[in-house]
Image (tube, rainbow, N blue to C red):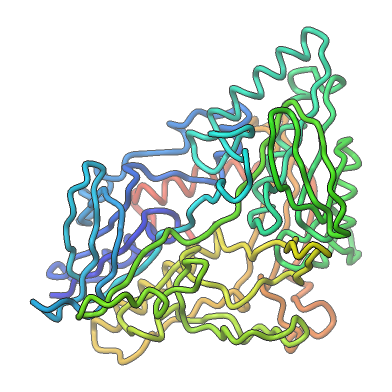
Length: 480
C-alpha cells in the first residue's frame, strides 16, 4: 500500500488528486490537505467581480466530491515537511494544522506540493481588500469588488464622474491576464449599465509594453498577418476608450490615490474612485526539517518560498536564458519522492526581460503558471508518481512550459448573445528560439481573435471545467 499526500486543492492539486485516485489501486491512499473547504474555479471570479455571477456558481464543497471519489480530505494548513521522518521513525511526514490549532502528522510515501501562492498584499502599503483596493483573487474578494462597482455605478447615475484603475499592485506581479480580463469586463458592464460616459478607465501595469502578460509578449497570427501582442492589446484598449500606464510599480495605495514609480525612476500619483489591483505572489511559507530536527527549508525552497525542482537555477543574464532552463518533471532534486505542481514550483527565472529603475526597483512581470499549465503539470506529476509506485525508477512524464501551449479567453459579459471576447493562444508558453528562431513560438498555434465566438467558448469552458472538477461521469475525458 502506498500513501500519496497532496498539499492544496486548487487547479493543480485537485487535478493531481483526481488522476492519482483514478490510476492507483484500492489499497493505495490519496489524501488532500487544504485549508479551504471548497474548490474555486478562479477564472470565473472575474464574472463574480462585476456582479454577473454569484460565489455559488464558481465554488463547490470539496468533502462530498472527495468522499464519492475515495479521496481522504483534511481541511488544514500544511506547516512543515519532514522528508526523513524523525528520531522515532524514518517515515516521512507532513505536519498540518487545523483552524482550531490542532496539529497532526500525516505520513506519506509520495508528496505533491500544490499549495499555490500566498497573496502578498502586504508588499504594497494599502493594497487589497483590507486596505484601499479590491481584488478578484478569491470568490469572497470578488464579491467585495462587485459591491464597490455597484456603489460607483450608483454615483455615476447621480451624475458623478468616476475613475477606475485596474491592473497590477506591485512591480513584480504576475497574472496580468486576470487583471486584463477584469478591465474588459468592467468596461463592458459599465456600457451595459448605461453609465460608460461617466467613467474614466485606466490600466496600470508592470509590463514593459502592453500585451507582455509575463511571457515577454508574443507575436500573433491574426487576419492573415502576424502582429505583436502590444499592437493587439493597444487596439483593444483604444477601441474601448481605456487609457494605460506601463512600466509602473505601485508603491502605495492610499484612499482615493495610488503612488507609483515608473521605470525612469519618476515618482507619480493617480487619483481613483475604484481600484482593482492584483498582488504579487510568494510561496506559502512551508518549513522543512531533517531527521535530527535541523531546519533544511533552504534545501527544498528558494527564498521566494517556492519549491526547488528540476530546473536550472543558475543565475545568468537574460541573453542566456533558454527553454531548457525550465523544469520537466517537477521532482525535488533533494528528495525524489517529493514533487511540486502548479504555482508551487519555483521558476528558474522570469520569461519577460527584467527591468530595474534607477532607484533599484524591479519593474517586470513574474512568469504566469495558472490555469491550463497548472492542470497539465498536476496531471503529469500524478502520472509519474503512480508509475514510480508501480516500479518506475524515475519520473515518466514531463510537462515543461517550454513544450506546452496555453489559451486565454478574456471574455466580457456572461450572456450568450451580448458578450465579446479577446481569444489568444500561445505555443509554447516559454519561447524556444532553438526550435522557432524567428519569434520563439510556433506561429501556426499562436494567434489572437476578437469576437462573439470566443465568448461562447469561455462560457462553455466555465461549465465544462466545473463539471470536470466535480468528477462527474466522464470527467477524465475533458482535456486540461
